[in-house]
Amino acid sequence: MTLAANINRETVPKHIAIIMDGNGRWAQSQGQERLIGHHTGVESVREALKAAQEVGVKFLTLYAFSMENWNRPKKEVEGLMDLLVRTIAGEVDELDASNVRIHTIGDIDGLPNNCSDEMAAACERTRNNSGVNLVLALNYSAKWEILKGVKSIASEYAKGNINLDDITSEKIDQVLSTSGIPDPELIIRTSGEHRLSNFLLWQAAYAELHFTEVLWPDFKQDDFFRAILDYQSRERRFGKVSEQLGKDV
Ligand code: FPP
Image (cartoon, protein in one colour):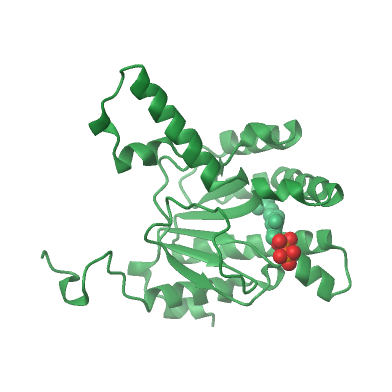
């Protein structure tokens, strides 16, 4: 029996986002090249997706490539792009058959053409699916999307299309690449690092954070369930005090 049996299905987070970290260290600990860690990490992506499907998580966001990742050695960047393209191309039939809808967030136009084309095709192919929404953060940076959003709002204001009072929290939600996707209630980071690393900074305002020492290639379904159980053990107060929770005060 897996840990899933202990999860309260009524309070499963609707959206879980994961910073998949530790692929390089995992590979090095095995005396392998870093890219082997990324390849093995794809198996953990499958595990996380299966676990999300099992307990009814509606949105699963994965930080697959950050804007800062371009600074890695050329060989690793090329290997990662190749892995992303081949994984999506190889898995899209099965993802479609299991009713998964694929989305991307980030500057997709800044990816190599074969990668952006493959992602666009996968999003289009699965757009009518109603199961888990798999959101891939690719060439993503929270500061980039906030800056881009602020510029688009400023431009609307300068043209006189909106007033100052139209600039609300909801308006900002709409100009981010996550528009239409609910904020994550839970963010998981693997490999013992305790940072958000420019990931979903606006959307993480009330997220619970779960950090685990497990390296991403070792991350299994039970690790996913453990994170949900940790989330369910916490009291989410949204600025209120305990006594106010569940009451209209
Ligand atoms: C971080 O580990 C991991 C990445 C930058 C890449 C993650 C990508 C995958 C697992 C492929 C996912 C594929 C799909 C289709 C979603 P790291 O290299 O920073 O590890 P380190 O901190 O140990 O060096």
